[in-house]
Amino acid sequence: MITDLLFDRTACPDLEKSMNVYSLRQKTLANNVANAMTPGYKAQKVEFEEEYRKSLNPNKLKGRLTDNKHMDLGSRSLNKINPEVVLRENPINDTGLNNVDIDREMAEMAENSLRYEMSTKLILKRYNNIKSAIRGR
Image (cartoon, rainbow, N blue to C red; front, side):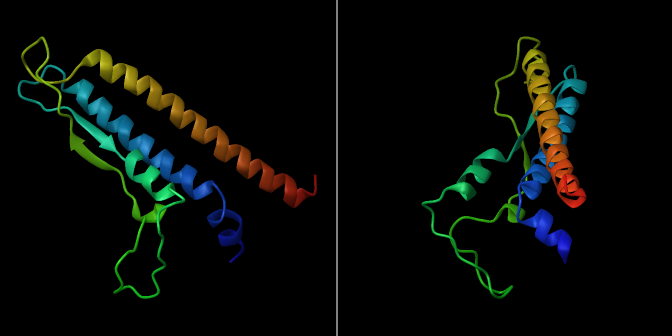
């Protein structure tokens, strides 16, 4: 199908995946902020980037699955890498209630928001380029 040719072989799947990760991260950070005064609450974080970096390593052997029963060989493809919400291993903070550092959470939310906005602008630019190509401009 033409949409597969236009979108699956471009940066669009990467941008879509990153936007999904940033969205999950924003929800996780907001949950941490909401529970900043909850006794015993354990802060959470989203892990994704390390596995993504590993999948981009050009020196790593990559295999291709030809059957669903085959095992993955080498680095995983992007569509097989999913974000994971895990507990943050910080010590209990000054309040003595939990390990949520509100300043850190707010700083990470601001950074995450900028990354989401950047991804949105990049994908919008990609779609505008495709639209311009279709119009012949």
